[in-house]
Image (tube, rainbow, N blue to C red; front, side, top):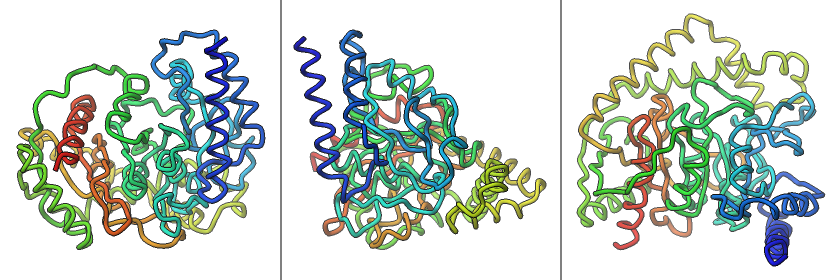
Length: 410
């Protein structure tokens, strides 16, 4: 009985916090019967294994990821029944591990460019980033300790940086993406947010296929990707990045400078072609029927994709494969890249989710990435991004814990 009472109290605290803060943050999709739904979930959970990895832990779920019993709208005006389907495997894994699904979190429309109503809890007149805006904001505001997002270009790393939380984008294909409304299946990854690197690591054994628990080990060899890619960051971000790199060196971590990504413009073009082409094909039937319900930004992106031919798309996919191979060769003697997580702090206004450019090459190559809070510019958070080798998510999250500690000690 004590356990049931504790869980009921937890539900009360979750719902009270959401009801108190979400009217101005708009991190969660409105749900009139949230409290009764969660109490029913607790009644089922009370008879389950209290030693489950996430027993009673509330988790937000981005509203492009299907959850049984909750409509999926993907931030759009399309009828939910048109977007329905089986529950995502990642949600089933959370529930099996004892988690409570606190609710659906706000997304940019179809995880594309049209932002939702979410405000940045750190600075309400600044964007929280996107497209996983609601998930990042919900964690930043303390409404939930964890939330799922998705990333095609920068939709986990950038909002994590803007909202001052930790974000993880696993290796492409490491986490099942069934039950997720795809933006670009060749790029999409399910990721998540937590308050810190330790929180990110706590979800990984539950969500990642074939997780191999390992010790953090010694400090990694890090590399700064010098060249046209790094030049995309603004002066504020670059000044902070120089301080962050110096702090890591002072903590005894090796940080090299490696010229790379001379073909960055081609990388950007390949991502545009792949993402737009696949977005258009994914929405072919829906757009034909419901075009007038789409927001202008999403409709424009779909029409751009419709104008891309199969030959150009095939060439972009071939470039993607070659680029990933070249990048893997460059990483033979380094453990992770270190970069600004975004071009700068969160821009003012809610009309845009910010520039995704700092995640572009790593998303094209399908590499795992982490964003950690690393100081501020005025009152706005700044994120530091670490990008690991393909498939070495365990090592990257281990390094993230070491690096976070090193930054905190400086």
